[in-house]
Length: 525
Image 1 (tube, rainbow, N blue to C red):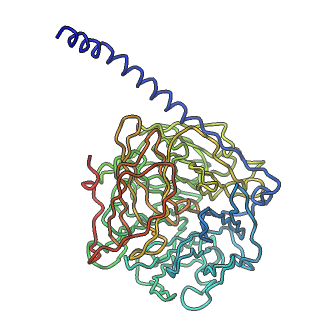
Image 2: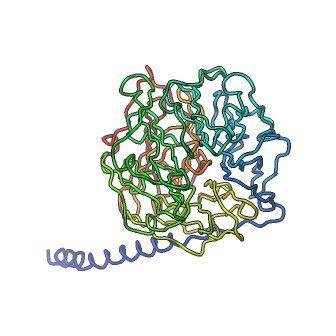
Image 3: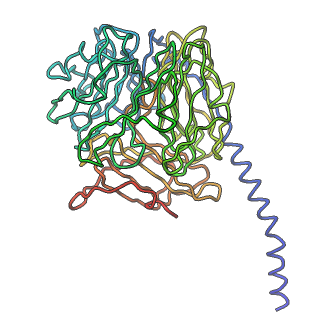
């Protein structure tokens, strides 16, 4: 009994010491993940490093267009680079995308598998807007027939694929900025009827009237099972209201897009450019970030709204909402693999690009000295895309810009953090799984953390990140639970997944294919 008492006392005496060790270990790990290191790729054998960017507000995207398991790069206006592995790329000549088009002030891009044939196709928006079908041999054929084949009539600024009526085919939104791309037109909304045919929707509020519509993105911000639409509508020389739409498909069975007019996000005047819906605080719902241009005053702050169960609170503290720049794009990714989303913002008019590291407590730290923040001379950046092109588990960055501002930055952080990546393939859903919601539960620094991602074909300025889902996992050694809510509504739960791997997951079709809601109750615990 005496020995037992001594052992018990020794346990209690050592408990504070053990806690101290764990605390300082956590601090050391957290400190190591904060050290970001991006290297500009300058290899003379790499065509991305040698090419110069075109003038204009041009987009880009990491995509695996040849289905070989690594990420290729498309950069507007017409550069396609095939990833050969080992960090090397081949510039594909005569691929067809963008060839011979009348060029305007901007060129947007959005990739998806519009015909559900198993490879990614490209939509290119600009002074001429064109759908290019992937032929599977490094070439793409422009579709010239039907409503989708009206190149001049469909001219615009940005483009975005999403299945807004949940029929398993991705539909297309093209924004038209009145006064910037020829004679003013309304926006273009094209419904995918299947079999390669599209119908132009003319009786929607989205496609009536003109305004300086800029970048449009789709996201199910209210988690009701359908894609909503958010269009930054910055007039450049002043401020105005953006055009935000809630999809009524879940409520009424009809995919009617109804303009949102109340609430802080919809009611605030801004020179809005690029909306993003992300769960930056890992609480399970989508928060909002939108970049601001000049408003005629030279510089504005960007706006962030925290979502607390459907109630939005504007965030007013921190550099991420107080830096006054002339901002264009924002992309979100866990660049340091610590289990939360960081933010990269592209700027012009002499403003440096910005990188905001997520502190994990709802605040952000602005990092300086990173390679992608400084632009050569007076060059500007617009589009940007994040993706793991070398399959080493951390996300690399390509930034599109004119001249030498066109650059590839390899993520060389090597901080020991773990990760998981997913290639999701729809079956009942659209093949590229655009709109799928993925959540992962892991224990990071002793805390059970749910993270959330949404597969999007437009989440930057005329650009989008890789369609491959990426989770940074910090010191977690496994994924406890992975939940995928496919665009069809099917829900799959996978448990006990090893970290540091790229998985391909194809949608299973359950008997009856019942639609399921994406609700917080699925993720408690």
